[in-house]
Length: 341
Ligand code: SAM
Ligand code: DTB
Ligand code: SF4
Image (cartoon, rainbow, N blue to C red):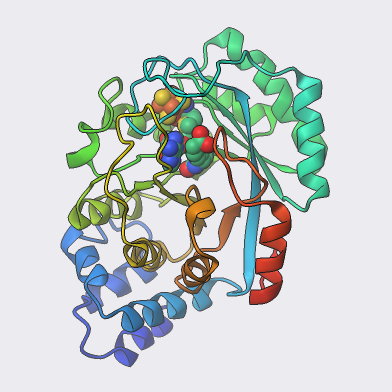
């Protein structure tokens, strides 16, 4: 691993990349602060081809470059959320077209999971618009997790902040992944969310890690943050004792009625650069090209795969907003010679 990382740097001679940092990242998973924000900004500033070359080299060292993992999402409890996340159509305080719905029935969730499996998804991710689950909310979700797992699917849940003991219950039910995003850099966070802190999020991630559940954590770009702040988000993730196994990079899906609606759109190349920087800084994590594909030309999606994205959400809906049709994704994968895993 060390040799190939070194190779990447040697082959792209003249880059501002810090050789020691790259080698530390590749070789020592216990080292803290493997990546400074400045190191990551230097990646963003590389000429595009050099950045992609570097990302491809790292990607090919750790993964089959033509395999993409596919997860299907289901909103098991929609809308009416108490939080104030400025991007989210499910927050009760914003006037969006999302209608609140109670927790779905077990049978309906299992039908959706079976459909996802039939379409070729390997993981089923259940999302709830909660600040966090109350114990009475958690019980039925534990049942859903156990039954979805019994169908032979990997399980993922995103239910908000976890209290002590809840991650262990999720693990016992058969949960493989817990998604909880840092969303953005600590410095920008307060501009987007005020009802929970960055520290709250880190504590939930610690609980997930301690319960031996795989961590899925990433963020959203295109919220008006600076390049430094995009790099700052990646630094937070990459410098964790163990970086997340799965890193969703969402492009803000702008929804009318939310405070972030009307934010200047992010340049698509900057989005691709973010994916490449995530790949380089977290070489063994799955990097998921998440929300935002519906508005993304297939050429940009192809560049994201080239930059090291190797996971997507699959199926026509994310939680409340649209995602490309599965049939469109099948065509795109066929065009690019990508195999689903
Ligand atoms: N309520 C739980 C929570 O916030 O942790 C779980 C569901 S929440 C919708 C999961 C994640 O979806 C958020 O952390 C955010 O990163 C992402 N998300 C929500 N709305 C989005 C949007 N409009 N565009 C992109 N990503 C979004
Ligand atoms: C993640 O990082 N993105 C997904 C999933 N984790 C839960 C959610 C995207 C939500 C997009 C807006 C919506 O559909 O409501
Ligand atoms: Fe609620 Fe999650 Fe939306 Fe925030 S992101 S408002 S916590 S559903």
